[in-house]
Length: 132
Image (cartoon, rainbow, N blue to C red; front, side, top):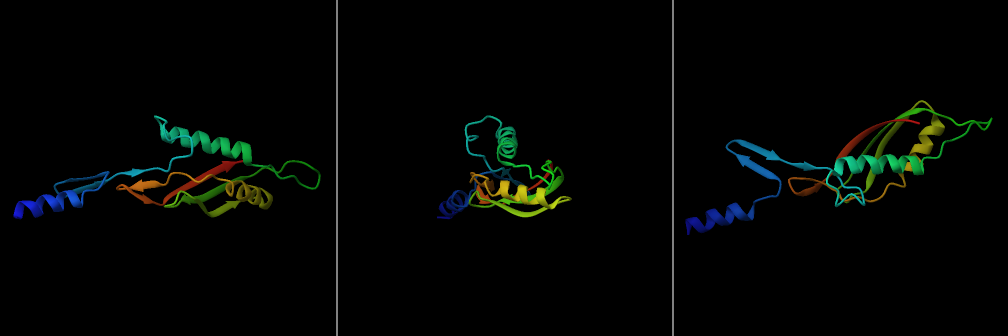
């Protein structure tokens, strides 16, 4: 009976991506996966490439009163939540029109496969510096 409970407890509470060795518990964290990168060997590189493609294809440079493009630097703080949706927490920069254009671009981010920690979906945070 003791052996039954011992093995049942061990297998019932085992988690993916969690290793226990002595007094050390290691929990693996996996980043969110951009749509189209699921079968990629290097999902991190694929994620970065898809993100830069998204910026390139969806960012619309604002113009000033003279019709000239407005350029600037922004720092975006965001996270991909447990459902794979991008949530922007802040966009800071030196040009208000650039900030507004970045916010519009970020609203078009696709829903991703969420990141995991210990096999369970979890929020993964990012800070992106952008020179536009």
